[in-house]
Length: 317
Image 1 (tube, rainbow, N blue to C red):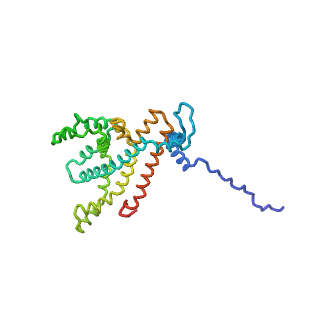
Image 2 (cartoon, helix red, strand yellow):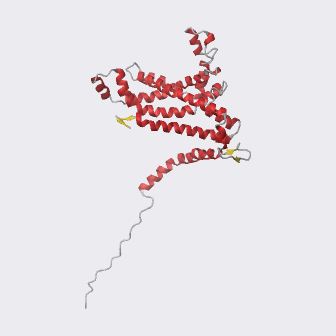
């Protein structure tokens, strides 16, 4: 009888399906779950609100009665509105005065604290603490300091020989009201100071040693070593200060309410009046978008100009 020598057939191996929820995907899903609350909040309360306000800017509405589409009329009316033009001038002048002044003062304080002094940590805390005080509290405090009749500042001026008849009326005077707000803004210089101090302490000591070997004096070391190495910090503070200055509201609202004679009428204060006092929400939304575009243009201008003056690790951007 013939023997069957054929090999037994073997069934092909069944390919195992890779599970959909792999370890990598599980970690990725976990990460998305963690950021989901912020993302949902951003989409609803920030991006959604911005889109809604853009739509409102093309309407004549108070959100209660029937709305009417008016196209770009709100934007056209803005630039024929003397109060809006005044608020634009006041806010721009406030920014032009505040940003350089606060930058210089914060940098000077940082340079002083970067020296070898007794209890440097204590002085850093002292200079930084005012930046933690709320805007409302700061405004009330400065209202006492700048009181024309019994304030500390005018009392000091009298003590150094300034006649009472020549004392500034500060926020009660059309001439001195805006300088009063600029003076108040210096209260928060401690926040910028802390960043400048961190930048100063990150400058490599080898650069100063090389400069001294080349015969550079203190001023030359500051101008050619310290300042270039601080330009990234200056750039960062400059952008934040421009954005913050264009949104000034609390001081003008609480201390002067835009007066006297609209001398401190800022754009955000005018926006507040139009929206929450007069209920012209379409017009107020147009103001908000013009303000947003102004801040965007200023910020992009600073960013573009940084190529010419900001240095990173000795390399020119």
